[in-house]
Amino acid sequence: MIKNLIFDWGGVILTLDKERCLDAFDNVVGVSNFSEYLTPYLQKGFFAAYENGDIEDAEFCRNVKELSSKENVTDDDVKFALYEFLEGIPEYKVKMLLALKERYNLYVLSNNNNICWQKSAEMFEKISGMSVDEVFEHCFLSFRMNKMKPGNEIYEEVISKGGLVPEESLFIDDAPANIEAASRLGFKTMFYDVNTNLEEELNKYLSRTDG
Image (tube, rainbow, N blue to C red; front, side):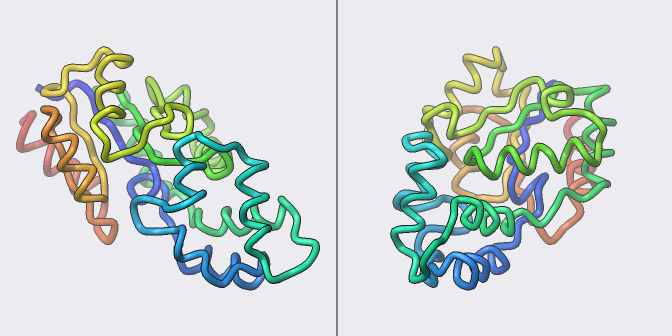
């Protein structure tokens, strides 16, 4: 029986807009090649270091500004461009999570960074009226853990810190590599196609397994 639901954040709960983000880095920040660092599931270079918690906000912004073709780019400009990655959180997903909380322990497991996490957590609270910490038992975030999916270490820490039994835990992610890694460690997994309705897909999965 499934007792725990573990959600990826960006792509699963939070809708992302990569092209809008890249346009902002090009037009506002003056970095036309930011696509070299921003990839669909796992960032590269100094962006990867940022999401792994190896560098902090100020150093990330400094690295971006060093790539800029414009003068007088500010940290706020860099943050604005990152915020453009965060399209929003559909209201139906928030309502779904609040309903699921009555039956399951909810967790987040996300490759993320401080700037995007703080902004998206504000989005979530504005819609739900509750903070992420009130809805989820724990938010496992790469930049706080110094570990990233799909490395085994991040899943192992989720198991140990969360006190979770993998076989009783369903992990939902939109990246095949992350799903495969979790499955190898015994988690039940559900690949989420971002073009589908999360609630419908999850209900179908749970009705088959918990029915």
